[in-house]
Amino acid sequence: MNKTVLRLIINRIGLGILTLWIVSLVVFFITNLLPGDAAQELLGQASTVQTLDALRAKLGLDLPLYVRYFHWLGGMLVGDAGTSMVNGIPISQLIWSRLPNTLLLAAFVTLVSVPVAMFIGIVSAMYRGSWFDRYINILAVCAVSVPEFLIATIAVLIFAVKLGWLSALSHIENAHTFGEMLKVFAMPVLTLCSVLVAQMARMTRAAVIDQLSSSYVEMALLKGASPIRMVLRHALPNAIGPIANAIALSLSYLLGGVIIVESIFNYPGIATLMLNAVSSRDMPLIQACAMLFCFGYLVMVLMADISEIVSNPRLRK
Amino acid sequence: MNTHTSSVTAAEPTQKASFSSRFHVRSISGLIGLILVGFWLVISVIGPMLSPYPPNDFVSNTVFGPMSMKHFFGTDYLGRDMFSRVLAGTPYTIGVALAATVAACLAGVISGLVAAAATSWVDMTISRTQDALISIPSKMFALIMVASFGSSVPILILTAAIAYMPGSFRIARSLAVNVMTLDYVQVARLRGESMPYIIFKEVLPNMFRPVLTDFGLRFVFIVLLLSAMSFLGLGIQPPEADWGSLVRENIGGLSSGAPAVIMPAIAIATLTIGVNLLIDSIGSKSVQH
Image 1 (cartoon, one colour):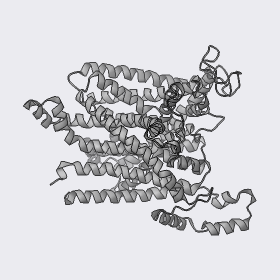
Image 2: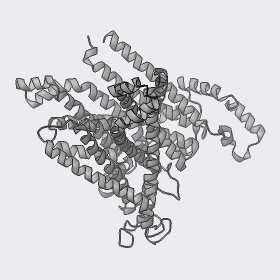
Image 3: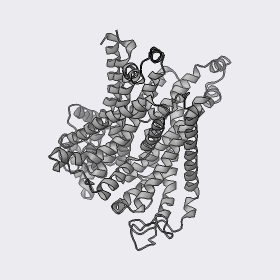
Image 4: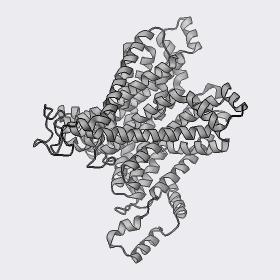
């Protein structure tokens, strides 16, 4: 790793932090734009001017908006996001009880989707224009154009209702053995993977084709290298950067996808926590979940950028 | 995930070996796309007139009834005619999404042009803000907006428009920056033309096709976003219903395989797949020109 690469990466991380700060502004001010505050919500109809004022002072709501913003931001930075307005439990506690589940789901999805997508992408790039390539392309267009809830409901219809193999809900607490784990995760993972694999496979295919059309691959062809050697030995190492970029960008899609999938299968993750917060208008919890999701998204995009920088041979010594 | 799927389909190099067969398949799928999109656009305008029953009336005693001559799409969880309800949902799904897409693309293209034409400082500010907006996943942004302002139709349109504006901005800005460096724009500048003249007469007409393709993609994303919100119960509110809400309210019929839950889902899928097939064929044509 040389100085140019390091400087570019630090630059990118700096931009990421700046972006995260603007995101925090957007999230905070949207959720505080409407009149009516937590104190009113908590006391409801029974509120008087005195009790309202007292509670506002206690919650710090009598301070001007920008002061509250810095309080909130400071809290978020040290991992203290306040307490839930609905049940008074500290938000960090709520999030820590759910986060491992969501990360576990994401890990499963990554483990399944990345190898499958790489395989499909590389094979369809090698045999581009063949019937396999064409049908994969049409299938991929279909997979990215239908809503996740449609794929999930079809999966439930087939595997839970018609075949009876799996349960329609994810009872994660019942999963003790590996077999039971598989049963619980099969449908959420399948649903998330279908869209992810389609996206990643198309991008992998494009990256490999891009390399295959370059002159050094033609040179290898003229030397008499076999098609498989040409792809695996010559094209693929140079396509790793764009492919890693594609994988990171596609995985960031997961963050949107889990919202639907967790809700359909009633999976106890961060997304269902946030959805419950939205229906009960638990603003501090919504803000914290939103920041967590945006942070995750930014980290993914940052990783995509960095993998592109690191894999660029022109920047190496 | 918003922008790169388009670039992948558009960047298809034309292959020598199977070029003709490939083009054939492409244009057939493009035709299918055109037919599907045209069909749904017509239905969204005249659909409510074709409705055999009032969409909110209880017309049958059987809930989750099967398809029949009386009820083409069966009946829903309250015994209402599903065919009429899908028709009534069409203007919501297509109209709201179309309004949001127009708003998103207008705002995106205008801010993209301004950023490309303005000084570097203004460009920097606009670009940073748009980058921050694109880092909020669209569903997350929609949840924040609905939690703060409720889910009325204007809020949903505004939400989808803001969520998908940055993608449109990025494309418009990079296109405009490219066009700005071309000779004929330089000539127009030297001629002393005003900035609005250059933007509207010289730059904009040359961005038309990619912006149109982007419009189609954005429409698909917005349909998916709004359907997902309705499916979660946070989109179009009862008694009104778009296709996403129809899937949600009839999800109980899933175990019996009722057409009430399958038909609105098929409606969404045919619309979005249709638009994507159409864009795919437009994209590959533009490469050949």
